[in-house]
Every structure is written in C-alpha cells, then in structure tokens.
Length: 230
Image 1 (tube, rainbow, N blue to C red):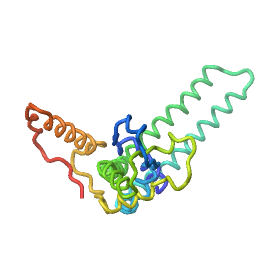
Image 2 (cartoon, rainbow, N blue to C red; image 1 turned 30 degrees about the vertical axis):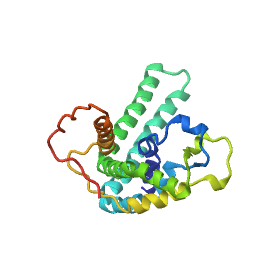
Image 3 (cartoon, rainbow, N blue to C red; image 1 turned 60 degrees about the horizontal axis):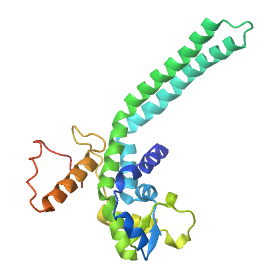
Image 4 (tube, rainbow, N blue to C red; image 1 turned 45 degrees about the vertical axis):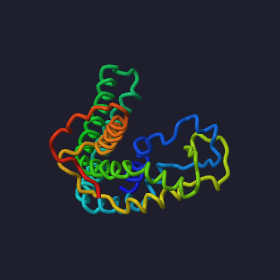
C-alpha cells in the first residue's frame, strides 16, 4: 500500500504548481534553481503522516483488495492457460481461440472494476490528501525561493545539465512542512478529487478580476458547505 500512496503522491505535480513568474523573467534571472515538486509532496510530513493514517483507517479495504486481487489473478491465470492450450493446437479452431481470448479480456476488465470499487474509499482519501497539499504548494515554493533568494525556479525535467547545489527540493519540503504540518484524511461528504484546487483557482481568478479597474462584483457562490483543510 505504501507504494500505491507514494505513486499517487507523484501525480501531485500536475495540480500543485501554477506558473509563478512570467516567461520573460527567464532572460533577467540572476539566481536560478530547480525543484522536483512531485518529490517534495511525497516527502512532506503531511503526506507521510496522512499515508499512515489511511493505511490504518482503511486497513479492511486494503486487505480485502489485496486478498481479492490474488484470487482474481488466479482465476485469470486459469483462463490464460486455456487460451494458451487452444493456441498450441494444430489445426487451431479460430472461433474457440477467439472465445478463449475474449474470456481473458472480460475477466481482466471485471477484475479491475471490482478491485477499483473495493479500493474507492482509499483512493478518494488519497485524492483529498493530495488536494490539500496541492493548494499550498505554490506558497511553499515561493517561501523556499525567497529564503534562498531564487528568482527563477525550473522543473528538473526541463534542465539539460546542472550542479547538485542548485536543487532546492529539500527547501520546498521544509517550507511545506512549516506551512502545512498536517492534513485531514476525513473526506467531506460530496467531495470530488481536485475540488480544492479548482476552488483555489476560482478564488484567484475572482480576486484578479476584482483588482481590475471598473471590475464588477463576482456572482454569489453556490450555497452549501465547501470542504475545508486543516
């Protein structure tokens, strides 16, 4: 399960960091560094503790998913063996062979759907943890850049060559730990993955429009209780 949680954390990068500075600033940058946002999220105290909490809270679902997965894999292996047996026959009965192959495909799809349903509460809890980290990641990045006097931060994947001392991923982790020491694993009713990030982005857009001369007030937000972070 730890591998699943870690892999999930690595996906945070697609949500966590919106552009911090305009492209033209690259030509004027005096201090440049790199940081891996995915690694920072996975190393944060908030994610580490939340992962442990999820493993404890959803142990029944995790164990059930693993046990059922082994059973389903055994059943799939039986169907694969039948398919292989048909494929070795001479001459081959194409109708029987195709039916055997389709049986394997159908079983795999059904198994995936069943395991996904069992693990749905776990995946939703992981998504909620990711979401809470994502909405604070830009703040952590800015804090690390300010502390290190960095005015241009790049993703390591976009760099051809660099020295190790330009990597400030650990600084981002430290800043994230400072501003977001913990997150909640209690998923609010009606929560959808990415909802917090969408709300944050909408608030930023509304604030930007409100700051423009002659701006009209934003439309009232829909009624209801929105998820909150700790």
